[in-house]
Structures are given as structure tokens and as C-alpha cells.
Image 1 (cartoon, rainbow, N blue to C red):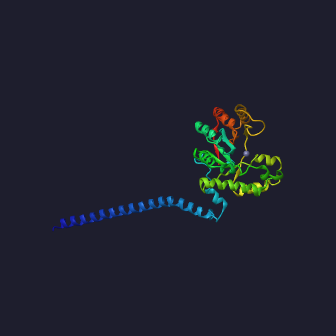
Image 2: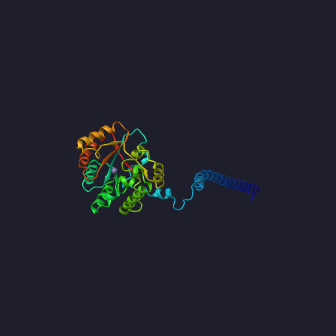
Image 3: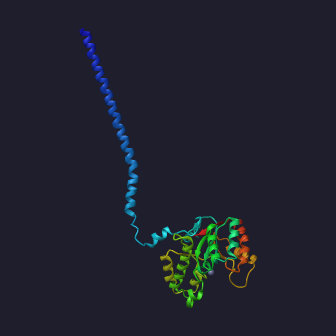
Length: 302
Ligand SMILES: [Zn+2]
């Protein structure tokens, strides 16, 4: 080897060492950069769910055994298709016109089917406040109740007997008797539709407003009882007057409804589907056509 060759070799080795060192340095830099990116990304990603999970753990109380609120939060089904509005929200104004068609005192095997035919024809749902005694009258009436539900309508509770002398002796609500009747109707409905069924909307026979009108001394106790059991009372703001005074024909019923609906943005309309209310059934197409023309949407109650 000449001295020149030795020098060249030395230089070559030096260059190789430098090249390798630079490469190692680059690789190290790259790794450290990757680690820092990864850390920031994951810490950001993990922070939120971790803190959310912590807050959930902190703020959610353990469900108590037999807690009525927890129990009834699950048991809320009173209709097949849930286009229902909670009773408490029925009159909350949102700029939209909403009509709640409600039928009391059924089921009947003569009028209720006619009303169901009309509702189906117009693709509209209503809420039926049923009397327990009428539901269990016979197999046919039970089938009518099934049909109410199967066709997407909602069901409410209208006591078991509807007997004013039993429910309001001396014109004061007997809370224990009343709630006993409500529970009886509720268990009949659960027998038909299953244990997860709950007809929460409650219509007081004669109307809650008549209890207020008579200054019923037991009203406070009654309010507490229905709240404790998660029922929700609702009256009406328009009426066809198809259940009192002299019998009316369908045009009179329709005109009464039209007049009492007025220009309410949210309106609960009372009609009756018990025996003998054929004129109400006959008025219903006119009522629906009128409300549709006025821009009302139809909702049920839950
Ligand atoms: Zn009634």
C-alpha cells in the first residue's frame, strides 16, 4: 500500500463514519418527533372521555331499589308509534299549530270502530281516555282497545267506574278510591299490553277543572297522589258538547268544536266515543278536514 492509498482509505473510513452518524442522528430525531406527536395526539384524545367518565361517575346517583322515578322512566309506553307529546309539554308554544284529538268514555264496540276508521283514513292519531269497566266488558271491547293501540293511537286513563258518586262523594274527591280505580284500569291495560305498558295521561271524569271550580278540599292530596304515581292529568280546551244537554247532530258538534278551537295554537279537543255517540263519529271527518285546512298538526299525548 502506498502512502497515498493509506491516506485515501483513512479518508474513506472517516466519511463512512460521518455518514452513518448523520443517519443515526436523523433516525433518532425522527423517532423523538414521532413520539412527541403521538403523545400530544393521545393525551388530547384521551383527556375528554376520561374526564367525562369521571364526571358521570361523580354525578350519577346509584339507582335506588323500588325508586318510582327510575321504575316509571322505563315504563312509559302508551302507544305503538311514539309521536306523543308529554302532557306537561302539550301547551308549550313553538310557533306550530298542534291539535290533540281526545276521546273519552270508551271503548264502545259501536262508535269507537267508526272513529278508528276515520282516523286511519286521514292518517291521524288520537288519544283515547278509557274507562276500565268498559274495557273489560267483553272480548269484543278488549279487541277494540287492541285496535286503538295497533293503529298507532295513544291510550289514557279515565278511571274504572266513571261513577261521580263513588269518586266524588259530597263533591270532594275520595283520593284513595280514585287512585284505586286508576290503578285497576292500569292493571287491566297491563294485562292486555304487557307489564311495560303505562297509560300515563289521566283525565279526571268531569274534568280536573270542575274539581278546581268546586274548590275540592282534597285537591292537594290528589295532586300529590297522581304525581307520586307518575300520572299526569290533562283536561281539554275545545269541546263539541256531545255529552250534555240535548242530543246534537254532527253539524252542531262540528260547529261547537270549530268555535271553541278558535285561534288556539295548542288545542286539546274533547269528544266522546261511548255508546250512542254516532253523531260525534259522523262529525270527525269535518273536524279533521277543518283542522288540517287551518294548518294544525295532529299529535297524541304521553
Ligand atoms: Zn268522561
